[in-house]
Amino acid sequence: MGVVVQKYGGSSVSDAAAVKRVAQRIVRTVQAGNQVCVVVSAMGDTTDELLDLAEQITPTPPGRELDMLLTAGERISMAVLAMAIANLGHEARSFTGSQAGVITDSSHGRARIIDVTPGRIRTAMDEGAIAIVAGFQGVSQDTKDITTLGRGGSDTTAVALAAALDADVCEIYTDVDGVFTADPRIVHSARRLGAVTYEEMLELAASGAKILHLRCVEYARRYGIPVHVRSSFSDRPGTTVAGSIDDLPEADMEQAIIAGVAHDRSEAKITVVGVPDVPGKAAAIFNEVARAGVNIDMIVQNVSQAQTGLTDVSFTLPKTDGAMAMNVLQVAQSTIGFARLQYDDQIGKVSLVGAGMRSHPGVSATFFGALAEAGVNIDVISTSEIRISVVTHADKVDTAVRAVHTAFELDADQVEAVVYGGTGR
Ligand code: ADP
Ligand code: ASP
Ligand code: MG
Figure 1 (cartoon, helix red, strand yellow):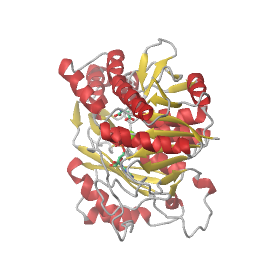
Figure 2 (figure 1 turned 180 degrees about the horizontal axis):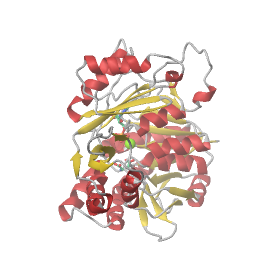
Figure 3 (figure 1 turned 135 degrees about the horizontal axis):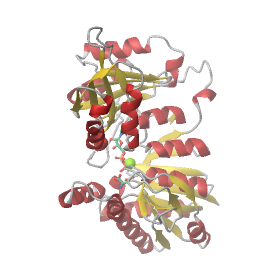
């Protein structure tokens, strides 16, 4: 008997009819002779609605209470899904993240899984029941408080359980047919990838392709879990995330140079203006930001002006951390000695990802050429071995994604990128 972990995202369980449809798919998997553990997200846009509710109460809710509120969304779906399965004559038992043994650290809102002890899940499955687990949540090892793993974290719950249960496969069911060469909501001619390596998927996820949670891909890579991304609305084949770029055959004609184009509108940019150009100032700036627990993404330092000996340092960070980072820097202004701060949240990041970049010259030239031709002004640039990213104005993101997608000949001849559900929120 195989062990299968299936995860259904919010758009796959957006209402009662959708929940019943998902229940049927789960039962079919059981009838095919598998033991099944299901991870489920909050219905539709519930998490956003709960966040809006909290915002109406206070702009700064205590992390512990916000996590308690948000985990309620997944509790609703796990219970109704278990009921729908029972209705089809199969036993299903729902479990919160804590009951399922998802142990995390205590950073509310972005907790990391440190251990998974799925004793109750295994017992339920061994007794012939389908285990349903609330995604995106766990319990802190130290404080015993309920935690959440960050937006999109149910994917990570699924992979972590697949690893702990030694599952044969982890299937991520969503509202598109797999991982595409770009977000199908922006590029209708995007092409489905049959397979993609962990490294490329990591770069895509880190660059904003929200089809998979970044930590989920990190976890899958570490434990060698193949992840199968598919639509819960169709029976199309989907995308397998597995393997390493180091194992790709050197001269594989099938291997695409580029895996895809990702975009991210969730970041803001802070510019520290008039920083004395002497050793230690960058360290002082980023120490302040790090002490506030803020992760930064890209950094640029401008050439200092000879007359003044001052320079500007810009960096990008999640919008959600913007106010906090501005606060700590303002407090440290006199000690660091910069002139002022600028904040811009009307930015977007566009990234090109592909293992073939390592061995194909000219990728950057084509990338920047496409952006220039589309009239996209570039603010910040950063690269990795298999990625080039630029920051531009938020209004230019869609244009940039489409231009780059076309320049690398990624457009499909026939439209194959169907978006079955979801609001894109
Ligand atoms: P779920 O609710 O199932 O977790 P998400 O909304 O988190 O679904 O992720 C699915 C969405 O990811 C798609 O609807 C699509 O708009 C978006 N997306 C972004 N980049 C990609 C990509 N490269 N391939 C497929 N989908 C993508
Ligand atoms: N419900 C959570 C969110 O909307 C977790 C998830 O869907 O993965 O972010
Ligand atoms: Mg998701």
